[in-house]
Amino acid sequence: MNEPSAAAVVDARGMRCPWPALRLSRAMRAESEVLLLADDPQAAREIAALAAQHDWTVETAGEGCWRVAR
Image 1 (cartoon, one colour):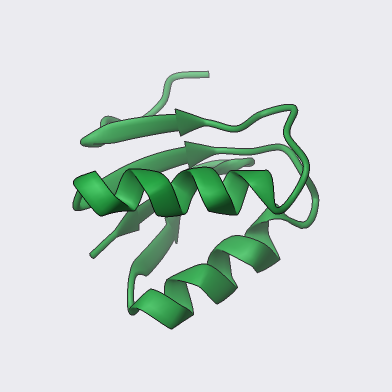
Image 2: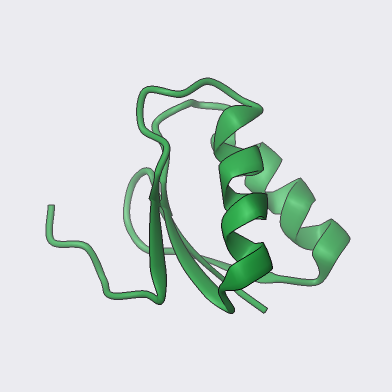
């Protein structure tokens, strides 16, 4: 997969929720934009809820891939 560039990449493939969201949250402390890779079916819902809490924007960058920015 040719992944779009981002300030940081968090590869949470193989991890079950809540780990992808926790890894994203930790990365967003230091970065203004993160590319998250996750294959848990619940990840999209967890990421959307976390982004709504923090007023982050979430953009789908492919299947199992999200670009999250402040």
